[in-house]
Figure 1 (cartoon, helix red, strand yellow):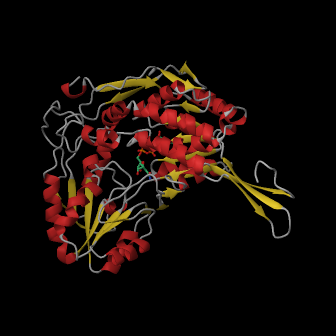
Figure 2 (cartoon, helix red, strand yellow):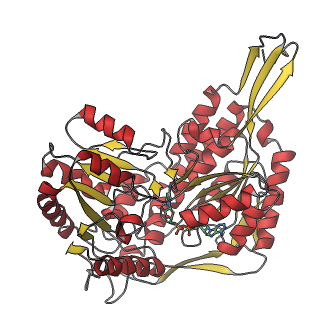
Length: 501
Ligand code: NAD
């Protein structure tokens, strides 16, 4: 094991068992998931792998906990109290969540530690929210009598996440689902399952009732069994558009609910009034380069006027050339590896395709040769890459690459910039760079995306996040994040009962 991370382990109590129905139990097949470090290709962890039989046990337990158990029947304040204890338990293990993120995905430790100082945050947030939300509203009908509108939990939730930001993406699902009174079967990506083991340990420690939170780390087959299971009321999915479409169609066939947080190919529109220095100061981070491009919302298309394209391209390339690539646990590293070999191959395939279709590489395009602290020839590293002379019909402008690859596209006027931004199957995120706030707002309203920022890339989980078009359905974050775990019931009564009045 190479030097950087020998002391940065995640200390799981029961990595070889599954947490189902409030108990740690053997995986029925006895098989394990083995995880390879993207920084040096050594195996860093092994955990139990759930089979369809284990998924079945988990759904039955979650079903029972929902239909017969205390959780949905507790008052919001009682559930909030458990969620706050849960949040405190997660907070106490912040360092392990940060280490798990870097270990599994190659995100630099400096970024992981900064972003995960409070992994309990969303649980505290939804604990506060559920106590203040009005869940029952009594109205007097025009025709006489009363209508009582009750917001109720949607039921048993399958929470399925991708590999790139495991604890955060799971929190965006589990926190509102539990707050609302749902029970959960958590299905992490097989490349980054460590986090749900910590969640399960903390759930057990804080006395969450049996069956309320269950974990089934598994691959595609058992995961598809999970969303097909008649005991599941709702699939909450984050991942690729292709998988999302598959899961949504499975759910639709039996009218199970689903919400989808899918991919993106987001555009930053750079207007002419803003100095290039001011733009590149935040545009490189907005492009997600320091995360090796492994995020859904990054600004991977840069739209610039034809007259300023060379100036912006050179300034952007200069920033990329200065990024220190290295082992995820080296504190000097500014950009780590791609999380896995298959994703690296995919990224290199897109780079080859960009070249073949006539785009020009201004910087990057290859694999770094020798990196400090990384055994020679090891690690899934790729250089930050800037393509210029890109047209929006090229594959690298249309498809999500999920790597540190930026496509710069020239426009003739602002109307064309908006048209190019919208000429995408995706609609997740966008940004405009200008010092004219009126124009920023006007452009923001014309770009068909779920999130849009002025002069940077902003994200705040207390506000709705989600996509238009192929980027998904539903919104996570903030009060909207509760709606996707909610059914709405209307009760007609001549007189409302005292408890609802
Ligand atoms: P993926 O779609 O391959 O897998 C996501 C999850 O679905 C994994 O847990 C996987 O095991 C599971 N899965 C795969 N096939 C399944 C099936 N047939 N039935 C049920 N489950 C199945 O995605 P990935 O490669 O892990 O992650 C990258 C993708 O996630 C990118 O497209 C990225 O844009 C997207 N993403 C979106 C958001 C967002 O909030 N919009 C956030 C992060 C990542």
